[in-house]
Image (cartoon, rainbow, N blue to C red; front, side):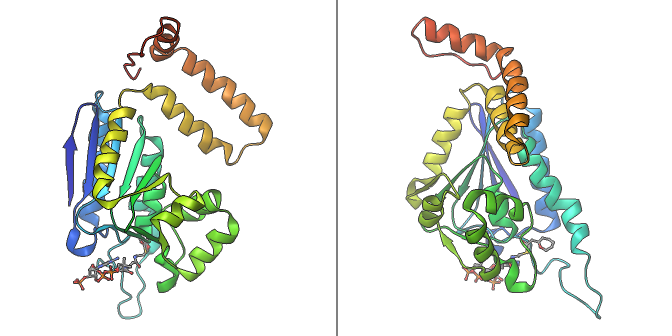
Length: 259
Ligand code: LHQ
């Protein structure tokens, strides 16, 4: 249910249940987690692209996979979230390299919020983001209630979540929900180019940037200034920092190693 392509310093992970618009069942969750673990264990992997096979990116939870209420007995959705979705979002935010999401088509429910959990989101012009949860009586999960208001503000987050209206790639870009909308036929090329570029950059520093921005969401300015001091101290001890300054002084392109 997941395909992995390995390039020079980067990987592409493709959700691969196209008949179901890459909706998540247990097997796909397991395969995705394994693919992320493998990328993390590969010291040469310095950037990741997440995308979907076929005409959709991901339709969220597979509603046919033990999701229905039978004989009045509701499934424990909290258990599914605890076992599968929360570990996935936590994993994405803790990967030791930057992540690019290439949203190739509709991203609905958890699919939308998993896309938004990546560091840089590109979307094909035909892609749509739908907080579909309210249509079936649920709430945005996979971090959506945290991510969305921070990206687009409370007014838009609330209406998107309550109305479950689709947001086009271009509107998502205009609202600051994603980085860029690109032509469909150029999406994978652009995503791959971005990953290849990121894979040549100071990986540790990039991941410290993610940590700093994530922490800023709950910090006061004072706390954030302290954190910046600590993370900058850490960044300043990396070989890539030494190389960056050396290359600047020598007026040449730096050769970062990701350490
Ligand atoms: C699907 C799905 C799908 C199964 C399309 N499941 N088959 C986590 C776990 C714990 C608690 C609960 O919550 C969650 C998080 C969640 O993600 S809940 C939200 C789940 N997702 C949704 O509610 C979205 C459901 N899908 C849709 O609304 C539409 O399919 C969208 C708007 C995504 C796309 O519409 P269309 O482009 O018109 O395509 P389609 O509806 O015709 O879908 C194509 C096929 O994919 C179709 O199968 P079929 O056999 O008829 O061709 C769909 O049944 C299937 N599919 N999403 N989530």
